[in-house]
Image (cartoon, rainbow, N blue to C red; front, side, top):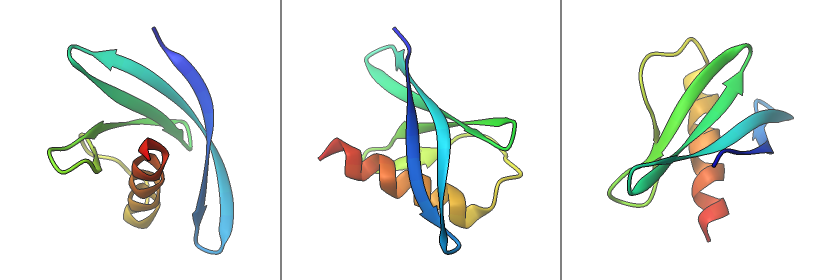
Amino acid sequence: MNEPFLLTVKYAGSEHELKARFERWGYTHRIAVLIDEETVIFEPDEEGSYRALGNSTAPVGLMQAIAEKLRALQS
């Protein structure tokens, strides 16, 4: 079951509202985030943080901010 939601992230001095979608993936999950017409997939790692999969043209700082926000939502 995919559950769409808006993810608000602070980056470069402003707030960004990004469309995101929760996806079940076997025994775990992934979160697909739309960044400037590009879908970036985030998955939880062994330490409870999130990592982006594949190559992306999105700024590294923005992807780090998204990963931190996703981790904060787990709490």
